[in-house]
Length: 557
Ligand code: F6P
Image (cartoon, rainbow, N blue to C red):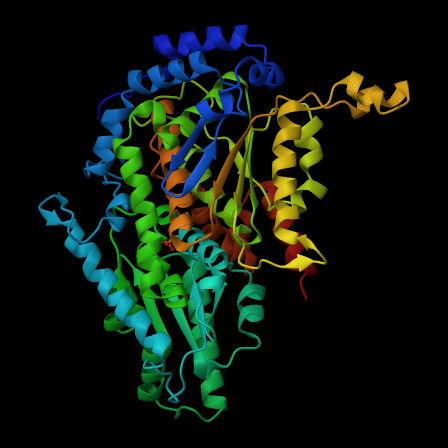
C-alpha cells in the first residue's frame, strides 16, 4: 500500500503551528472587529443550518486548514472512498456506506458488481417486509399481528437502530413498538422481554458477521423464551415442526453471513443481506435499519436515506471553503492537534436525540482510536478524541461546569431544531422556546464568558470574584434544523461520518477497521472455562485475573 502523507511534515501543519502560537483567542473582540463574522462562518447544508463562528478560528486558520486537506491529498482519498477503492487496507475492503443511499438510477460498479442494483434489491425486500408487518399481513404463529419488534444486536447492529428509532418516535406507527437487546448481561434480555406477549413479538437478529457472542447468546435466549412461552400458552404443539414454524414467523435476520443465519435456524427467506463493504458502525442505513423501516415505514426510510445522500453529495462536490463536513473535520484536527483537546462534547437540545452521543462514540472512537497509520507505521500526532455528551438541558445541571470553567478546552457541538414535535405551553410560555433560550444562552456564555469587572458590577464580594469569572473563548458549533425529520437525522449521521473520515485522512489512519476490540473478545473466550470452574484454565491466568476469578468463584451463590 502507499504510505499516507505525514500531515506533520506538511507546510500547512507548520503554518498552523505558527498561527496557533500567535493566536490570542478573543471571541468578543473578533465579533466586534468583524460584524460579518457570524455570516462569514455560517453555512447551510441541505436542511442543516450550521454556525462555526464561535470557534477559535479566523480566515488565516481556515485557509491553512484547507491547505492541510490538500497537502494530505484529501480530495483523492475522498474520491477513492466514493468510487469503491479498497481504502480499508487492513481488511482489504472497499468502504461504500455512501452507496447504501444512492438513488436507484445512480451507477456504481465495483469489482464488476452493480452495487446500486444490489442495494435497491435488498431495500425493496426490506420495504415489502416492513409493509407486511405494519399492515398486519405478517402474522405471528397464532394468527395475531405483530405489536413489538425486538432488535437483537450490539455495536453498529444496535446503536444506530436504537438511536434513530428514538430520534424518530413521532414518526412511528401507532400500535407498533421497537425494543433493543444488546448486552450479554442476562438482565438486558430478561427485562426487555419480561412483559412481552410472544405471540405478537417479532425478533430481528442483526449481526454483520453472525458470530458475535453477545448477539448469538441473546438470540438463543430469545428463541428459548419464545418457544417456551408459546408452548406454555398452548399456542404451539410440542414438535420440531411446530417450533420451526414459530421461529419462521417470529425471527428474521440481518447479516452479511446468510449461511450462518440458516445454521441458526432462521429461514433464509426471512434474512436481509448487506455487504462486507459496509462497516458495522456505518450500517444503520442498510438492512440493519430494518427495525426503523418497520417503525417509520418505507416512505420515512426513503426520506432518511435521502438525507444521507444530500450530505454525501455536498461532501463530494462542494468547494472546500464551503464544504461543511470538511471544515468541521479540520476544526476537530485544529483542536486535537494544536490545542491538545482530549475530548469533544455533543449536546443535542432535542430529547429525541438522547442516544446520539452514544451512537457517535462508536462511529468516531472505533473509527479514529488508532495509534498506527494505514501503512503500519506509528502515528505522528494525537488521534481520536473522546466523544461524549447528553441532551441539554440535563447536561447543564451535571457537567457543563467543567466545560465553562474547567482547565481543559472542550469543543462542543450544540444541536437543536426550531419546530418541536410537541409545541406546548406552560401558561403563556412556549416551553420549547424556553428550552432553546438555554441552547442560545449556553453557546453565548461559552464564547463570551464574563469578565471580573462584569462580576464586580453585580456587587459580588471581591473574594469570590475569581470563582465567578468565565474566561469565555470556549469553542462551540451550533447545528440547527427546522424539525427532526427522518431526512434530518440522516443528514446529521452523514455529517459526522464524513467529519470522522476527514480526521482519519489527516492522521493517515485506517478509520474503517477495529482490531482494537479483538483482543478482549478472544481473552473472554479463553477465560470463560476458568469462570466455569476449570482449575487448569484458572492456573493459566495472570495473578491478578486468577485472584479476581477465584474471588468470584468463592462469592457467587
Ligand atoms: O466488536 C466490534 C464490532 O465488530 C463492531 O464493529 C460491530 O458493530 C459490532 O462488533 C457488532 O458486530 P456484528 O454486527 O458482526 O455482530
